[in-house]
Image 1 (tube, rainbow, N blue to C red):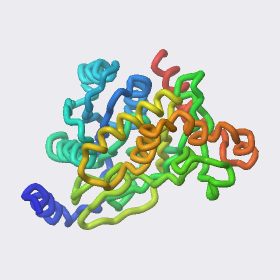
Image 2 (cartoon, helix red, strand yellow; image 1 turned 45 degrees about the vertical axis):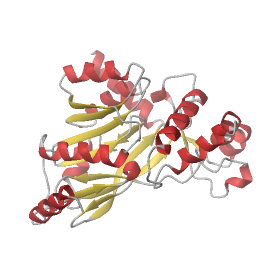
Image 3 (cartoon, helix red, strand yellow; image 1 turned 90 degrees about the vertical axis):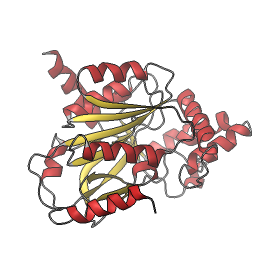
Amino acid sequence: MSMYFLKKVGLALAESFGGFRLTPSPRLVMTLLVKNEEDVLEDNLLFHKAMGVDCFIITDNNSTDRTPDIIRKYQEKGWVKEVIWEKATNYKQKVWVDRMIWKAKTVYKADWVINADADELWYSPSGNLKNDLSATHSNVLKCEVRSVYPEEDKPFWQWNKMVKTVPQPEQYDLSLYSLFDHQNKKVIHRTKCYLQISMGNHKVTMFPRRSELGKVHVYHYNIRGKRHFMEKMINGGKQLEQNPSKHGGCHWRYFYQMYKEGKLEMEYGRVIGTPVYDRLCKDGFIYVDNTIPDFFRKMKLDRNE
C-alpha cells in the first residue's frame, strides 16, 4: 500500500465526522480527460458552466486537433483552472483522474467533483447541478446514463434521439458492444472522505460512504459517426495494449481486435443498428428526447441577448 493512499485514508478518517453535512453553497469542480475532442469540448464547457460548474481541471492526452487551442481559450477566461499535458501513451485513466480529483480537493477547495468525459453532458432537471448537491446528506450520487443516437448531419447538441437497452441484442443482430448495450451509472462525489475513483468513473471508493440515486442524467454522445468511432477504438485499443492492467476498457479491446482482423468498419452498422433502425424505433428502443437541444437553444439565445 503506497504512502499516497495511506495519506488519503488518514485524511478521510479525519474528515469522516461531518462528512455528510449539507453544503448550502457547494463548490463544484469538473475534471475532464480529453483527446481530440474539438467537435464537442467547447460546447461541453459552455453547457456545464451554465449548469453550475464553478471551474474545470483538464488533462489532455496528446491531442492533435484543435482541442489544445480550445483549452487555452477557456484557461484565459478563467474557467479552466489547471491543465495537465499528459504525454504518456499507456492510458492510466484511473491514475490521471485521481490526480485531478486530488487537485480539485486540495488546491481548488472543491466540495463536490464530477469526473466527466468530453462526450458527456451532466443535466439536472432543476436547471443547476448545485441544487441537487446542496440538498443531500449522501457523499455519492449515482446518475443514470442515456446514450444518444448519432445524427451526423447536424451538431451533436441538436441530436434528440435516445436509445434504450436491448435485452436480447441477438434478435436484432447487434454487435456485442452496441450503442444499445446496458449503460452503467456514473457518480458525482464529495471530496471529503474520497479514496479512489474506478476505471471509467462509474464507481468511487469513499470512507465512510453513503450513496443515493440522483436525479441528474448523463447524456452520452459516445458514438459520433463512423470515422470518429473507428479512430476512438483504434487509438484506445493501442493505448490499452501498453497498459499492463487488464481491467476496464473491454469494449475498446474487443473493437481493437476486430480492427486488427480487418472487420471493424463492417461492424459499425451493427454497433448503431443501421440495418434494423426502423424496427428498433417501432419497438421503442429509439425514442425522442428534446431536453438537451432545448437547453442549448435557450442558452445560446441568452448569451446573444
